[in-house]
Amino acid sequence: VVGSVALDTVKTPFGQVEDVLGGAVSYFSLGASLYDRVNMLAVVGEDFPRRYIDEFRARRIDTTGLYMMPGKTFRWGADYHLDMNSRDTLYTELGVFGDFQPEVPDEYRRSDLLFLATIQPTLQLHVLKQARAAGTVQLTALDTIELWINTAREDLIEVIRHVDVLLLAEEEARQIAETPSLRTAARYILGLGPKTLVVKQGQYGALMFGADGSFFAAPAYPLDEVRDPTGAGDSFAGGFLGYLGQRLSSGARLTAADYRRALIHGNILGSFTCEDFSVERLRTLTPEQIAARYHEFVTFTHFEGDWRD
Amino acid sequence: VVGSVALDTVKTPFGQVEDVLGGAVSYFSLGASLYDRVNMLAVVGEDFPRRYIDEFRARRIDTTGLYMMPGKTFRWGADYHLDMNSRDTLYTELGVFGDFQPEVPDEYRRSDLLFLATIQPTLQLHVLKQARAAGTVQLTALDTIELWINTAREDLIEVIRHVDVLLLAEEEARQIAETPSLRTAARYILGLGPKTLVVKQGQYGALMFGADGSFFAAPAYPLDEVRDPTGAGDSFAGGFLGYLGQRLSSGARLTAADYRRALIHGNILGSFTCEDFSVERLRTLTPEQIAARYHEFVTFTHFEGDWRD
Image 1 (spheres, rainbow over the protein chains, first blue to last red):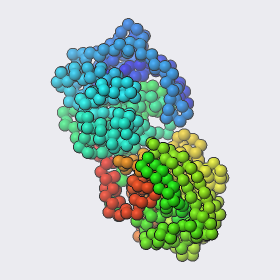
Image 2 (tube, rainbow over the protein chains, first blue to last red):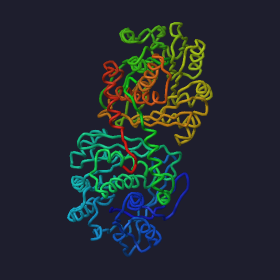
Image 3 (tube, chains in turn red, orange):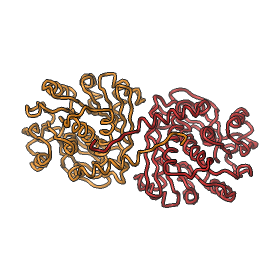
Image 4 (cartoon, chains in turn yellow, brown):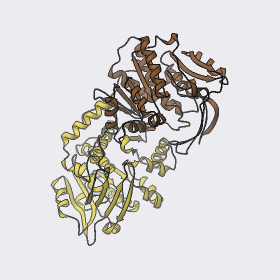
């Protein structure tokens, strides 16, 4: 995984935290490491707390590519509104992340899955080319944000053409395709090259469109309380790709059924992350808790019988 | 079913219609009559087109209780915004609907299911008492709108205490329970008396909470194009209660599995209604088309296997 490691300051109606572990790569790695080994490619400043690096290393996360550069770590601050569906970004201080030139360490060149989390599309393409040159990557996935859709559209379309899976929030899919219809947006995006489009709908679950015309929809896990939705999308990617990576590591050929199960794992990890601030819930999450929630998903989505039954 | 029959003027980005058949009872009845017989209790003015009444009668809809009163039919006009998720109500002319005093005809007194569509809560309670006095009603269901939550809260709570099933839009459930958490809202509402709460989430599907702690979630049918969402919620009720009514008519005792299938039928009828203006799509809808969409639902929501598979 390549992307951001950050220090977040977040306020929600349930409380607030200051300069705590954040960034797409942190959420993704802590989530995906519950399924398989993760190689982390990111940059932090000299102010980055050593304990977070120790925490990554204590799990199945390789930090060879977590470069420490002179300067400050990427910092982000946000206030969530009462309904938790919108937030005000208070500040974005890029620090050393602003000059990030990701180079894939030799140690990572045997990865079979690559996740390009949100960074500038030209950097995503740069990492993709390095990974492809290594020759072992079997599955590539990409996430982005509105900023790059608006300011680097051509570069973004170029990198989209070269990945297998696209993970987008609902509004991002509509913006890329410039249409209000999600199905039309999916056809446009899949027409560019990807084989799979995952549309994240937050509290409403997720949809998955295949280039073969297949479609899958799963509702979200019904949480009693969303304490902090920060990182839910990156945790979703951690569950989705962590599960697929585990399958690849075991030598399996990915099937349509694997992708469907992966989407449920994405929903599950996204839901756990919302239960507490920062990466707090991912810290204590166990495979048994994931399994229990998976079984709940089976139970609360299952229906049977013919329509006349 | 008791509620409104109206003449709607609606404009969406896809076109517009003027003084066409609308109102909760129209959508509900045309939908539910695909499953079972429907007894209609509503009022129209002398200006109500005869052809609409003929249309009801040509289906399994009894119009004995569709009273024609001196004056004008309820008229409603609305403009939908580009995203189709919000609309401006241009006018609401109650006409004879403003003085509606619903009296259940003797012919209806052997109904086994009662749907109280949106009208003033005291009138809903009045009809409920008449239906209960007849003694054959096995299942009662209620819908409402924000207007009554805000202006007749106590009366609304009173009628909620006496029905089996509540059908609410997501925001209405939150408003009634005065909490942002849907799960908390469900507990509050089910604590008042109903055995089942259905939360309609429009383009995102629907949730069903049981007083026994059960939970079911189903995504929406992914439409290529929403031409006019008017009546989708009433059509949802038509599919949901039409299916349950058909089961009751066949002498079945309703099971949890029936309720789950009913929710899928609700989603299906809601989705069909969005495909065209007014009740247009319900006019041509066939049981075979419902069956085909039901099978699509099974296909695009199904996933299997244990989490480690």
